[in-house]
Image (tube, rainbow, N blue to C red):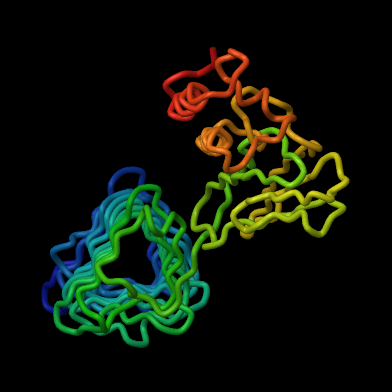
Amino acid sequence: GGDLTQTNNYYQNNFNASGNHLTVFDGEGAQHISFDSYNSGFNRVSFQNGNILFNGKKQIRGWTLHEDATIKNDWTVNLSGTLDLNGNTLTVDGDVNQVSGTVKLNGGTMHTTGDYTLTNSTTLNMTNANDVLDIDGSFTMASNTSHSGLLTAGNMFVAGDFTETLVFYSTNFAASGSHRVILDGNTHQNVSFETTSSRFQTLYLMQDMQRDYTFSRPVCWVNLELHTEVQSILLTAMRDNVALGYYIMLYCDINGINLSEIPYYWILSGNTSSGTTISDNGRLCVAPDETATELTVTVVSNDDANYTSTLTIPVLEEYPLITGDVNRDGYIDIIDATAIQRHLAGLELIPAKNLAAADTDGDGEITVADVTQIQYYAAGIITQFA
């Protein structure tokens, strides 16, 4: 229930637990653990009290975790030998600073609410498919020990930055096999490798790759996996209807995370003419021989077919006669001004049924003044005709 202190008197192994010996820390307050010699140490440990304080200035012999445990403080892992999680879960409410020894997950889970840093001659052993290292903060690999063959399986979650620093061996984070690192933060994450001999085996990005991550080099992985999430999709059209022989543009606004390069596709239904089509960029062309009175256009996400948006477009035999829309294409623009100019020059006469649309000033005549009115309208200088 209190502190455990081992001091050297004559024999350095005067607390040399072995066999089935189990040490249980079940106090109610802070319990301090200190060993003068790493020749003494635990065999199996149960932390029923999470308020454990290790003397990080002195090495402690590695041990096997007997059951799930919580350490409610920052922890300096100063080991002689190996801490074996043995399939259990170890939670550290704070930072983990591993300065010596080996942490072997062995099918277990280690969760730290702060940062995890390895320095000196330290090793992290993740060779079991069930290994999970869950870091709420940043991860720094500054060990001078090669990790070739030590990071071959399991999943490492990092919510902060990921940094590999060259100290001695350039392979101090040389992941392989089925080992996977998942960057799952909710803010921008920086990824830095100082050496090309270290890299991820499989990197999984939970956020938007282009927006939420900065990499020190373009490709620092063998396999890249992206979390894809469609958040919204909306289909709109440049106008409410379309006449026979004309086209309208449709626009798809799709939002999400790590969407495909071509994020959606079009479905056109209700048409009777094979000449009525929609292009990849949303141009809906209605054939002159189309007999349908309305067309249905649906846009579907390539990443999640549950996300769709649909519009029904009425089909008109011709656009109504509107002042300024000389060619009756449904728009008042510079093309209409040009049509009047060509009419006045005798190059191409406006059809009789459209002449009333060319008299923009209402004086009963078609003149250059009507051209000017349309030019002003198209430029936004005026919003209506006299």
